[in-house]
Image (cartoon, rainbow, N blue to C red; front, side, top):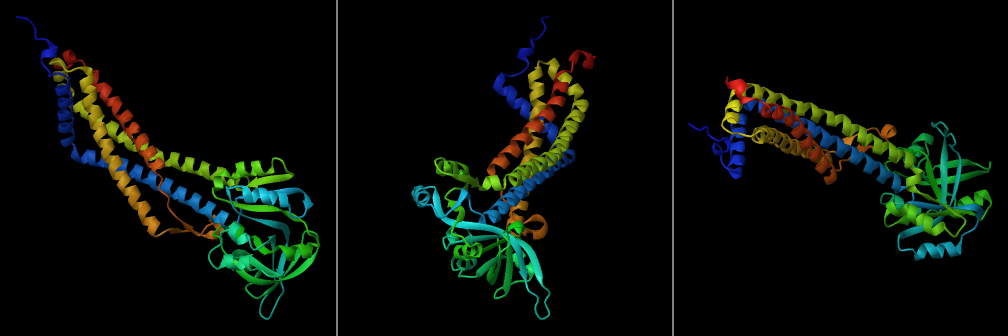
Length: 401
């Protein structure tokens, strides 16, 4: 009697795929508790990863936005003291990438508020900018505060909110300045501004360009401050405008380059650390499938004896890992997006004097979601591949005997 051919015992390729799915589904239905725990572990890891990345994105965006409210996108600083440059101003006006600009004069000094009845004297260092009314278009202070900036009169000063609290000087108070050239001046506080970035709110003050020029006894300016239609092109615009001129471009990316690098590194570190949770959860898939291989050793041997190929056995356990992985990813995405939505409605409050901003918004990026799901899926499939290859390597003759 002739021996049956293995290929005759199993259907052709389309039926083989259906058979692999049928067996995988049967295996999964017998271990519901373990499977649910495995899916839950993956979901928790994915949820934490999405939430952490979204919060980090929100922190970065909020900090940059707060910084750019009182910081120009681009500064053009003159190499040598001089007055306003009519030729450069025409070039700036003709550049479609420039939304607004203003000449400015910068100075540093010691700002003090004299002692009054029941009030102690206040003192703090400040960076003072002399600007024209056009600064209201270059900067993006909150409504009302921008109007104060645009209408600064002679001898008036606009203080950062934290700086005002530090020296105890508020609207209508008199403050005095000892500038970098040892000249003294007196100002009336017109109001305060708040950007949300504590470093700016605690150090910056604005006055009119004519007032600061009078204090320094000069008609010179430091340069020009520009707001662009797209802040990301600041280095290119600066290079184009200063290439034939004696000016040094200072884009906001250079001013806060260290901060941006730190934020990028922070996101990578947080993402990597939280991703370890996904890896740990992936080991849960490997454990479940490895146990299934041990329990189903005889069944696998019989399948191999009647003609099941190694590829079919591998496909069965990879399908099981795929189902567990997809289930965990789907649940994790729902939970992660749910947490992000909650913090969008109710932003997480943080101390502004420590983290520069007072609330932590959330920014969900589709690139992050795609990356998290792709990496999570690859990780779970790799975890399932180990027991799948072990199952495929079972020798039917040795087990059946």
